[in-house]
Amino acid sequence: MQHDLKLSHNIYKDAKRGTYYFRIKYYEKTGERKEIKRTGYKQRKEAVKACNAYMDEIEGVGKINQLPFDELVQEYVEWYSARRKASSLKSLKTHTNNHLLPFFKSMDVFNMTTQDIMKFQNKKMKEAHSGEYLKKMHVFLVSILNHAMKYHDLKQNVASLVGNFEIETQKRLNYWTLEQFNQFHNMLPNIQQKVFFKLLFTSGARKGEIRALTWDDINFDDD
Image (cartoon, rainbow, N blue to C red; front, side, top):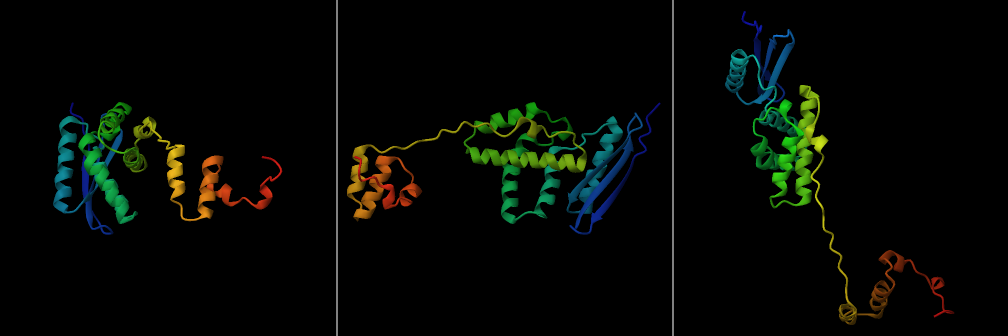
């Protein structure tokens, strides 16, 4: 006996944003009621076409990808653009268009795993990006999946579970030799600067500590 999906749908216009969206309702074989909503279509015919494609898939296999990543990104960008500065929106689009979408494409967000995130991070770490740039990329990915948790009942954020890019930074410490310092010291224009930098070099004190010194801090009795 064929399962009755009790499939229904509607196309709506978002008066505030001037875009269209659709809502599909149906029932699984278990009797569980399902609802799919997709937003952000600029023309009604685009919403109708997308809605029909979803219904065809539901009727064909009785199951549908709950939330393709590319559609989630489209929805999140629309949400983000109404709440953030233009410069922040530009940064989001750069990361999604150049990195997130080419990798995750239309992957079902509900089936996304920590392994997928790890593979994405491994790929990006082999590319010539700064640590700061990679960390910003991860922040956007986490935010997109948080959006799915808030508005689409995604149970967990796998990007948060994996954590940000683990990048070992190499801190470079620069030291002057005595010869280098003397060359610099000889070029200083006045005695005040010569004394100031001589104290910095020989004592290891910080600038603020040197500036805070008074005559009372000097011991004239001992060498």
